[in-house]
Image (cartoon, rainbow over all chains, first blue to last red; front, side, top):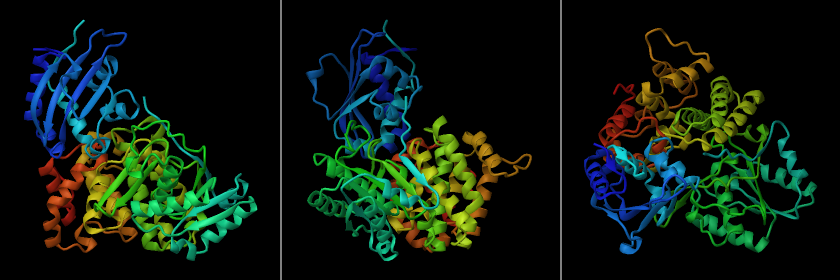
Length: 136
Length: 388
């Protein structure tokens, strides 16, 4: 069953995918830090979605759909317009290339991200491990 | 969306004389003591003097240059205030010069902070960077990557940004003539690995494919000749060109698993870079196998290899690479590099960790898990073709 993007169900499904992915566990085994994934509205999407992930050494300790960006102060923020984020979720573009071309922006300790680019790739793979439906 | 970035390339016999055409008041030459001894720095100074430029020399770049060396060079750069930085040497020298130039122009950015997500560095306003290659391997004269060592933390820093590459690459085969056979072979295998990985990684693109294929063809045709006779200037020139072409090719795509494994082995056992990556190349082709079968076949066709009916192109290509490596006295297994089985087994966990953490792994067409990586290293130690 397709899960509504940005909902708590979607965050729960992502947590489950992260917990069961051996590839993610291996790639992120030294990852330390929580993340906001922020999807910004653009011409084809009027919503703003924020998903909070508490990631630590290959584990997902928590995942929540967040309404107010000020609710948490995560170590990393990955954000970009819906169209660019969707291209990643549809596996039409590589997530790291999207970051390198500024289609997706990242705020946080860049040195750590550069040391573990595969963690980012595996995180995205987990996002595509279940069927997503986008709100109108 | 993606980018293709390359410097102006001046190549062929007498390419060094292009330095005499440059405009500027003063130049800062970054090099190492061996290059000074070979007389190359004097040749560079002579050309710069014809351009009316004074030149200061910093010759303290060591193999695997450190952050500390870069800082030392930057201090001198700041004192001297040149409008041209000229790197004369191999990959280490050119990488150090790239880092020095960034900090000279952007003192607010430490070399270790260079990353692909910074844009608008605005380099070139204060000085231009010219890279003069004296080895035919890394292609660093044309790439926008830097590898430095943080000796305090005992770690390697791989830095990449589309804006940090040189403005001009000088690819004069005369400067490669003095490379001894062993280094010619090691660096030549690096070229082949860049080109094959650039052509088959997941970041391959239309702008890099042709460059990578041409470089592969040149290596197959000329590497053995350059190793056998360093004065074979046709072979030297073709290999020097191949290194630069492969550098532009792979850096605008990415390299992949052979580089990850090579970096891993080199970090633990200090095996020369080109020898390491070249050693792993046929094994990674076998490992990636059918995922890239069409591309292996395309490479095989380019280098005129016949793929027997019923046999995979990956296997044929891997075997041909082993044949080429053997012909230039390269080891075909980790065992043949002289690493004992005990040391190898003791280092296994570190080897796996290093490979899995290498940034280039994201572009491998097949990414191994931990168990597969351990098996992979085991096979490469013994020299056994990968069959899983």
